[in-house]
Image (tube, rainbow, N blue to C red):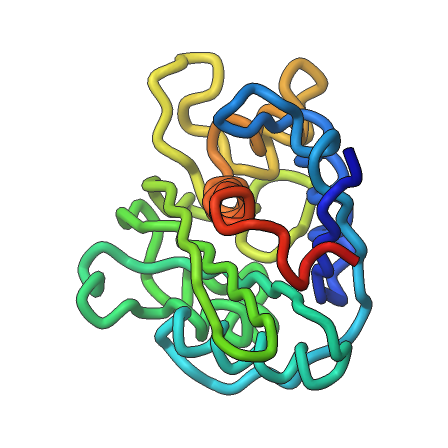
Length: 215
């Protein structure tokens, strides 16, 4: 059986690395590994991002621009933190990345967010040239008092996912990935909001037929 092609538009090295591991270790609802069904084509294209709190609005804008560039059905993904005190407004949401770009390790201090409950939300946008669909994944957790971990993939150094395992509890995403006993695959399989969103999208593709995606 020919694999279904997915054109994934991103300029992030971290997203490319995570996608490769995700495909190798993640399974669909029918038990098949993602890599046995889907063939991801990474399209390195920088998309100008709008300043927008709402991640859904931001992603819809991005994927429309991505489609205009690559001229084939494609997906983009954007993730951000949402403080539980501001769930209704989705803050900082789509502003997390530009805030982190400016503040870096001072993000926690400048936002007064140490110990604060937060939701890590990822939204995947898909455009086939006629319509746009979005898929969301979420992970609850808390903000660390300071950046921890060597894998500086934006706020992965300050987000601590909720976990009942005492060997993992209290660790940031970056610390989990850095531990050889767990690593990136463990994060992707057990916590990642992006993995949750991607699996929802892939199941959607299976349920709705190949269509234009078979390239």
